[in-house]
Image 1 (cartoon, rainbow, N blue to C red):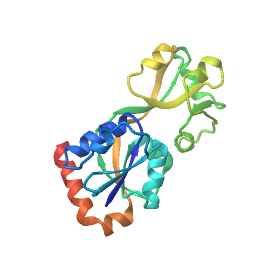
Image 2: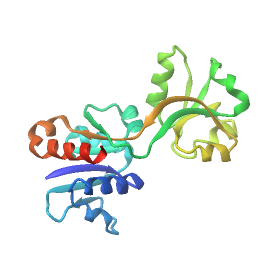
Image 3: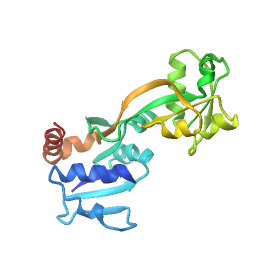
Image 4: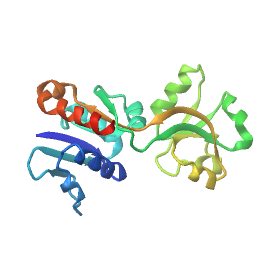
Length: 208
């Protein structure tokens, strides 16, 4: 059995549709259930529905052979696995955002950055030789500059509508082309190559 770790929510639905086009029986993912561990009717595939940030952990540990997760999460988690394909799903950007009237904020030597991407933000500013204060947040990131908790935020931006609604703008695009990626456990790629490699080839053909 080939086991997938999938991000719960919209990405799981989009992943299921893509895998179905490759001949994977994903009908179980369409069922109205609270189960987090599912199997296809033919018993060839298993699916774990987990938080996006946990997908790389399940794949690295070998509990899942394959995973589908955003590039933003891969940058943040930095796990020991193979990134095989760009699936072109859910494209967005990782940006620094704040008030348009305060673009000079980025040059502040005591910059306060609110983000859930703590490791990535720290790495970005370290490479620039800048020391910043990271303020960890895990929801409503846009609220941080509005309330004065932080100078800027470092977060994913897709349409920018939430930023606009809160009077914020993108000050800098740090990473573009953030999309869902197919990742694989290093051991699984060797021990289950007969099943995994043909699947990857089918995905390439469908994406093409």
